Length: 117
Ligand SMILES: [Cu+2]
Image (cartoon, rainbow, N blue to C red; front, side, top):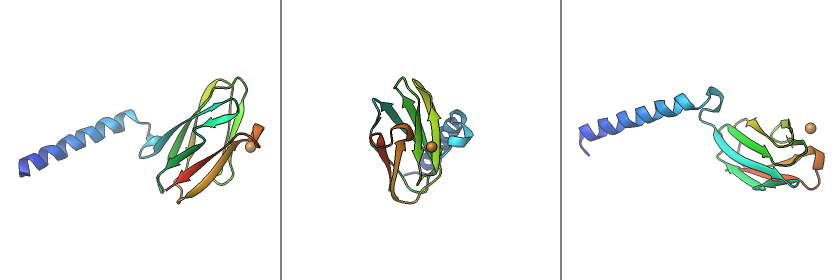
């Protein structure tokens, strides 16, 4: 590859990075974003995954009419999400492992897990 091509590729990459940085809120930079739905007291998907050592942003859609409370003891998060509404759950960078979460209002049936690899 010629030097000119290498330089122009680097310039393109820099432009692309600036474009991304301009559209992503500061808090979510470098974070892994995961879409998660909640319906009929079930998480969909029931298992989500994310890379280790990277902040995680879970975009949760509560499709049920009733409020739910997303909670994980191992991830140290908990958030009440009103019925038929969305929430953003910020999770700190984690080590590899399996982290269970649940709806605290339906703890026995409404369960899921985040697998960090
Ligand atoms: Cu709670």
